[in-house]
Length: 288
Image (cartoon, rainbow, N blue to C red; front, side, top):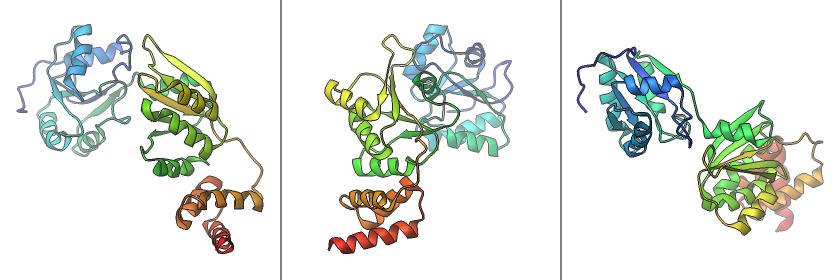
């Protein structure tokens, strides 16, 4: 990708991190359209996907691929073009770049090199799902995709169990029922929402307790489309008694090593590791 002589652009030189629609092609800002038309280059995850958006809005700006597989090779070339005074836009296939999409290292290196980096906010499946979930929005944590392996997934959920905020996850359709079931076990009976195909013709938001949602998708099968899961925050509860802690430990020790069981319960309860380790050790000895 050789730097070209910058054309007469109204845009200041720099990197423009530009949100694109997550479904409905009309969900792009006027400023976003202006930047995509005026940029010297638009970096895309998949040029074929971005070309469809360009066709709808009559945009003919040159595109180049920028994704996980070529990022290391492309970054120096992009930085050279920025240094030459070009205006370059970065988009993902859908939604806001860098949110579970490539771009973080490019932004960091552009900033370190002294180039202007600006954001053009817009559509985001994370925020859209949060908006329609009916769950608290004053504090939330975006946890991205959980592990595909069950034991690793359950460990990740255990670490999130005590976070005092609404949790937002992305998930694939074929793992949806299993992930919801693991959430019900690790997080407790919280209210949740499963949002799919947001802003598209077949948009659906299903709300209910985690266990109920898990049963529904187990019976109905994997749904179509991109999926966001929103889980309400933990309810305030009285301090756990010794019997409750021991029961949690026994459950964890039945399926995990002592070290992993202790880590899981510490994450779930927030209690000191030394205290949980001592109880786990005593339970293990009593069981021998």
